[in-house]
Image 1: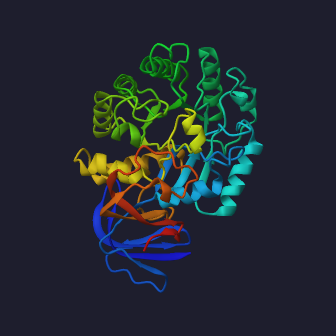
Image 2: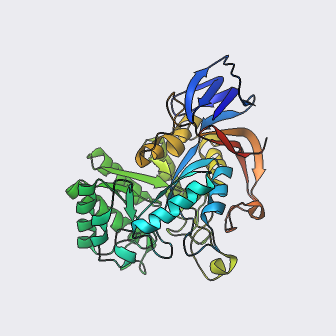
Length: 395
């Protein structure tokens, strides 16, 4: 598969120039200023060419809840949002505690052919909070384990899981929520579990990735842990850096206060936040009415983050590329995330000057649950390229 993108503003974490990028046999083959090739050519004049985005945290609901989302609708939503790699959580039906479920998800994604999918396996079998024997069966294709949406309440079980994960070479993604104290304070519930998991990571040496960090206290604990050399990474969501007020929209963890939003943005500026994770969580209209937490975010993430972080002059577009592409690709150990010769040809063409109004009814995702409906943001994905193949285009 050959593709030449010409005269675009080429941006990744470390560069910003006007030029051409040539993809051959699925990988970036040449980068220059006056490239000419006898192949399909895209005129990138006036647009920005960036590495496609990698989402470390999303839910496609397949198998078991395909009325909410499935691999196909999720893949189409992903490429519309500029993503070509996603890391799927295991709260499906059945819960992903086996290699058989992993195989089902990966084979279905491969047959659809729009994006690369990594499937997370549960820390405890079927989210029972205690059984970890299934981890002994895992192979090198598994990169992370997580009880996302539930968390692991028992500290000894989490310790044992970290020991096993370290031995096998896995990372643990933590949903930080101490349910025993949740009725007192959701903030306290997140903060206490964040401290516990950091301490366990430091003790065991297990790689720990903290999901959807939302409080100023939690991000400060992460800062200290990183300074001490604890093998911890973290993500924040677009909604936690764009919205304030716990009653704004029901998500888990909740939308926090302005001081938390400011603290998260400052942590991004200071280099303590590794990635943007969408926590894309499709629900039916009825489920949301009945209180199910979560929102669909993979189609809106770039626009929200570009507007709230770059347009509002907190960080550069290069830094945004770092936390949406380079870092999450490195954490997931995929050969993507920068515009470098030899990297996979996964790119996205965006119009930074385009102002859009979010319309939930136009979402490709089956889920329409978003707090951003009717809001205006800058930056729109015009084209998404996977291994040199155009998988989404508005042009």
